[in-house]
Length: 126
Image 1: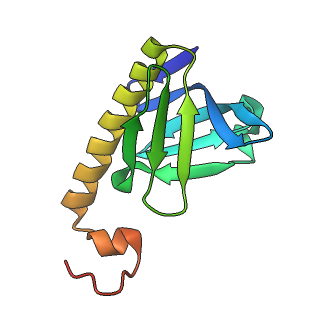
Image 2: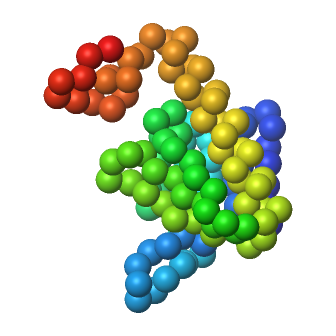
C-alpha cells in the first residue's frame, strides 16, 4: 500500500530493494520528499535510521520490466527496485519523474550548476 500526500509532495510506500545475491530482494519502506528518495528497513526507523538517499535532480530512472525499475545517480548509488504490481510500479515511476522534474526546475531557478551538485569533476566546464 502506498500513501500520497499532495500538499507536501510526499510519497511513501513499500518496495523491494535488491540487497545482494544471498538475501536477494528485501522489503523496505521508501519515502519520496523534496526531490529525495530515502529508504528505511521499517516505518518505525524513519525517526532515527535512514539507510540511504538519492537526489533525484541528478538521478536516472529506468523501467526494467513490469514490476522492476532502477534508480541511479551515475556514481556509487544504484537502487534496483521491485514493486508488488505493474500498477504500483507505474505509480512510483510517475511520482519519481514528477519529483525529479520539480527538483531540476528548482535547481535551475536557484542558479546551482551541475558541477556544484555533482562536486568537482576534472575537465568539466559549464
